[in-house]
Image (tube, rainbow, N blue to C red; front, side, top):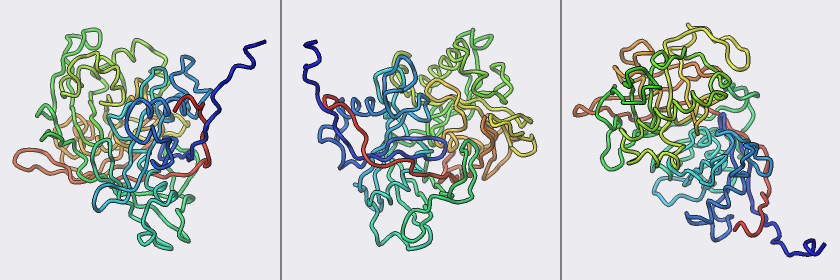
Length: 403
């Protein structure tokens, strides 16, 4: 019985807020509330976030943490007053792996950007002089992962974030207040890079022959919102109407998608060796597109072919997403606005400023303004609507030896 008297570190309490943003959920922290060792990037911060979420979990259940055992619900966010001029807050996003011990900081979460705008006001990080008593507060967000500006237009009622409303978002059960997001200059131009890293609107990607006969697959690879590889559904044996259960229970299918993702990541210059992809699961995304077809969404709702411009299915962290990642929606809208990409062609071709696409949970509209400058395509902004809501606030507890 001696082991019962063994000393164990007590749990520590850390102020936190659990929020839904779009079709994702995450644990939100103010930078100033984190333990001192976790206020800077590094192993201590990663260890904290993994313990908060309940990862790594070989049972893939997140029973001992706040995560929901899906890529949409294994997320943590840090907000602080902005270090950038003309911005209100810095927003840093961590995608926590479910079954492996790492946190991926390589990209943004577009869905949780919605909640970041709302949380910034909830948490007192926005200058009160910028918050109307009633109206819309335009929260200027600096996305620290990708070094980009995003404006979240958050409705305000009686000086507080208005969370409830009648805006319906496919993939979210209940209506809420609409938050409009503007992703400014969303293309990835770091190091002088192009929105199309290979310089082509469509590439012939070399993939294993068990992925596609002949080992050559057409792909549009774009860095806008988040680096994304688009392929045609029919080229890989799909309709574009698939739901999660059609793919996620098939290890061979998931392995083929990962092989495409790795091949694309190499061609985009995001990794130097295939092995690096293991620790970069969040980016790039892999998605497949199809011309419009009538299908049943995961809720049972019928989506008619004439309601959408194209169909898109995307994978996140190795699994087919239940709806659509916000950042991937930016990539879809941007690619659709550029004549000749696979996304644009699936939508019927030609020039367009917005696109409505079908995803497993329903439909989503995203706008994008693209133009050609000196032979290079640029996108000035992408716009879409989401919603957000505080689910719980107070303290998250982790064992003291975590931090």
